[in-house]
Image (cartoon, rainbow, N blue to C red):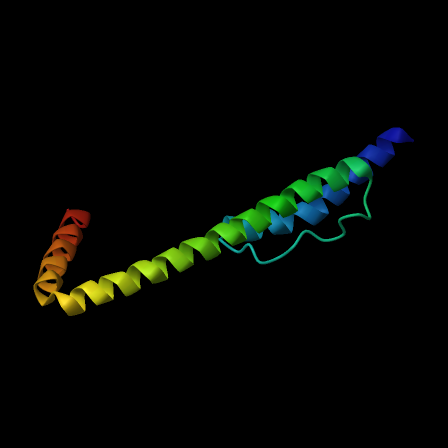
Length: 102
């Protein structure tokens, strides 16, 4: 009887987690782990851990996007104040593209 219970827990774990992992593999972290609190304790602990990971990734992505936006704003301001910096930036960007394709 216990083996069937463990097999059922494993099946349920796969059913709950595999779609989340598939989404995460393609960069989609917007779904939450379903049914936390309605599973056996051991399974709930694992599901809660996965939920914490998803929330941490979401927060880090938000912070990264905010940093990117602030950096872009700073760069725009610098380029407006120092027009010669714009031509230098374009030259560096061209060099990077050339290196990337060689």
